[in-house]
Image (cartoon, rainbow, N blue to C red):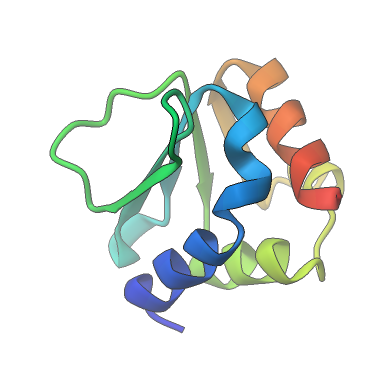
Length: 102
């Protein structure tokens, strides 16, 4: 799965992410970055945004991102095992995790 496929999958799940009401940057290393902006009426998902400005940045591999989106990797387990790093608000990361579990 490449960055465009990840963005497409995130857009499928955008409706359930509306309550997040924050910005999250997913840093996938050499594979690129994805900005999730749930601050407006619509959830915006931007591949390789020009700015890194986000309230929370999640750093993980593309493989782990796919596993998280598919529900094959628990975010708390990924964080504990060092597969997911959180920079910025950990509360926003927890809120995102709970929305993805619904």
